[in-house]
Image (cartoon, rainbow, N blue to C red; front, side, top):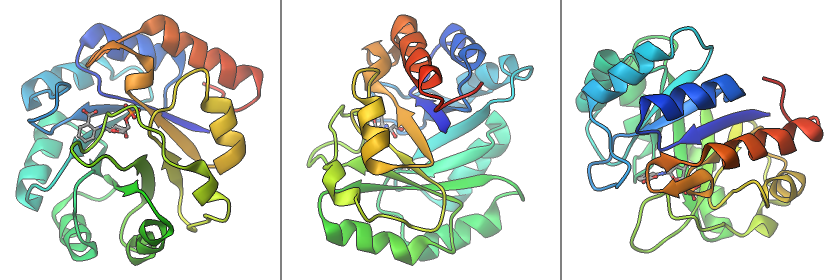
Amino acid sequence: MRVKICGITRDEDGEAIARMGANALGFICVPSSPRYVGVGQIRQMVDRLHSWRVGAIGVFANVGTEAISQVVREAGLTGVQLHGDETPEFCDRLRVELADGIEIIKAFRIKSEADLERTRLYRDRVDTFLLDAYHPGQLGGTGRQLDWTLLDRFDPGVPWLLAGGLNPDNVLTAIARARPTGIDLSSGVERSPGIKDLAKVARLFEQLGARGQHRP
Ligand SMILES: O=C(O)c1ccccc1N[C@@H]1O[C@H](COP(=O)(O)O)[C@@H](O)[C@H]1O
């Protein structure tokens, strides 16, 4: 099970979480978010993580391909997460702009079967899907769960991360129900926005390890 912990803003949190076995860390590049981090700060954190085999994913929403690829280069990111209303054609253009090997994750904010259907349009254009809950006024990091019962027959044919309101208490139920290839957590392992609760992160990895869902 791939585990991504998102909304990292502090060097020490990133390093501790990488040490616990996270496969990827997420850095929010959306200026309106309380978890926003600038490119210089991300670069500093990425440099500090070089001895850990951990991916560094920048989270973007509704910005141009050039701006994204500039941040990817300057910050040393291994991937991008598109959390806005990016079209399939936008993903094609971004692919051309990015260096080979940079992962593109498309996030979908799910409120109905129709939203799941729409993911098909992206299947050959991105590397990974991420399913988050819909919120009318916020793009992400809301702590809201999506309706896992909608996912009973979801089998997109590409790797996909389940996100949205996951925490150490509900993660095993979520995995059993939705059967994702990975999970993504942010506010469910925080003390306050952008400040991770390392005890909660440790409990998450204990839970996953005990059920054979994750090996660092
Ligand atoms: O975390 C944010 O502030 C954020 C802002 C804009 C877009 C995405 C954001 N976070 C993503 O939201 C999901 C779910 O978060 P949560 O676990 O429900 O708190 C996660 O994928 C983050 O990457």
